[in-house]
Length: 412
Image 1: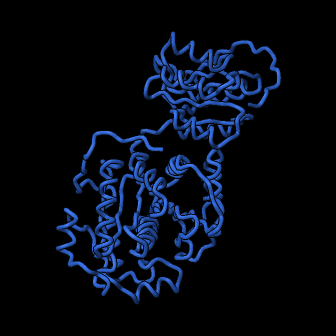
Image 2: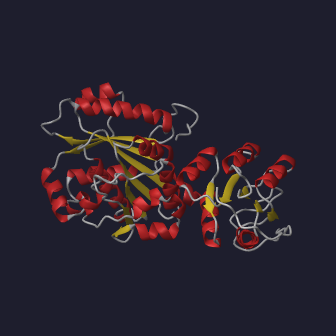
Image 3: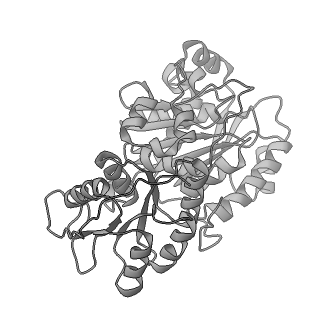
């Protein structure tokens, strides 16, 4: 545990005056209460809260004072607590988390700069953890991210996870074309994320340079904010941004699955649609995407092996994403490799296939050579028409939602 420099005595300060540009509405319940242990952080938090909240208080103290307040008073909408006073910061946070009501968001501030501690704090229920020295910009970005906007425009934003049943079934082809059509045909700000850091082919398919931005975001989630996202993305056209890496195959990249959730939350603030190409080789990444997704596209071919794996994925979807719209896309239909007729495949699957993509080698080769989406180079092809039909369905309520379980399970 790092030792803190001896601080000067801080006189308790109360900041309750309203100001313009608030992110939270006023009311009987406090918007934000902060307990801060040093003068510099106190002044910064006070100034930031005055800009963001209608009713706020910034008090001298730390985890002990925060717990005492929660034991005697009502929980605020946002609680900022300095945990540098605790010898065991995580243990100090647990009773605070247990004391507040479900919709209170806790932002912890401390001196431990360690991803393991960050993960443990997030898993325990903390909305965010910031490392001192904290700037007003960092605190503002954190609060704006965790206080979920309730406007219809934000609620309409979609997170589309694309999962291939097996390697080679065309998951990346579908991801790339969905994202491009949303950006170019629907004219919506769209971000395409390739979560396969080693073998992903999104950057290759679009003939763009992969960047280290995605790896940096996942390895250092505390750096994620709007400016970081903007610098980490490659631009493809006017409205489409791409996050894709190409790490060395022998490079052991370590990141926590929780960083994916933080990344999605931040990107969602900047894009109407997020399309995520989900690798089969990362079960924890797949779990996190399913937890966040509004729509899931399961890409398969009509083989026995793919049928088995789609059935497995569907079981996971039932538990992790009971309210997501699920689309099953059969690709490479007509290929000599297909072992099952469509009717037999659907009967065994227990549902209809939503979309059929017939094998079109000529269009696929043209797209690969041009480094562009198939829908861009062969817009009149049957494959492009089918993909346009799929894109038109996103956000529609025609498909019945399957409520397999009435809750979402918290995952590691």
